[in-house]
Length: 263
Figure 1: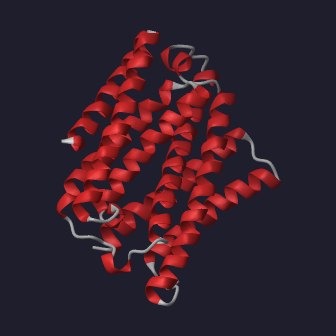
Figure 2: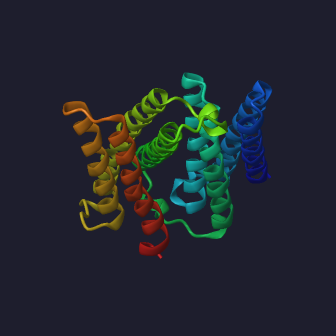
Figure 3: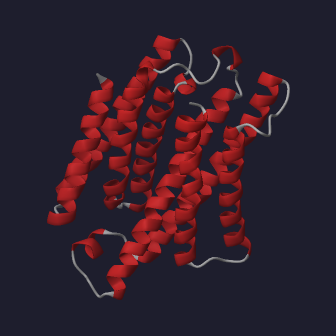
């Protein structure tokens, strides 16, 4: 039931943020955020239910993984709204939430992709931090897309609905920086704890593991963006572009590994 309630809340949040874009009534922002918080609550309850059913944290199944990713996306949206008060982020985040919740529901009957006997403390550090880091990277990419849309509105002198609804470019740049740095920090913890877990579980770090290879590729790309920005400086436009390119590696990690490599 809580799967459906989460989907319903995400759909209603999307509906009301869309209405806000066209109508601009502030009350629609309150309704949007109410449904976003309710969706976060229902997704959390569903996650706890899966935990109880499996007698272990459900990160080892695709259903649990995508459910937690949806939960993390809603959490990132709420945190970023509290800090920047920009509801238009939901226009991109809520459809992703609906998609991932539906994948989670459809994957409910699939077997665990992590051997329960190999589960340990380090696995339960590795997976949540990796997923939360990925959620921040996704939102960073969303902000990168918003940057280019808003920049195009300015160049073409189109000061209509989109221009008024989206944040100004400097605020979008701050959103990108915040989500990029937090995402890199949490993803790094996830990657390092994953290496420790692999060592404990297998007695050796398998550097040819597809999951590890794609995770390291993702980390290298985002570390390159982060350190280059810190040390050499990176313009807001190039930062926005780099987050979009970096997200391609995350997409390969999740879609490629989950559906093709693992079979």
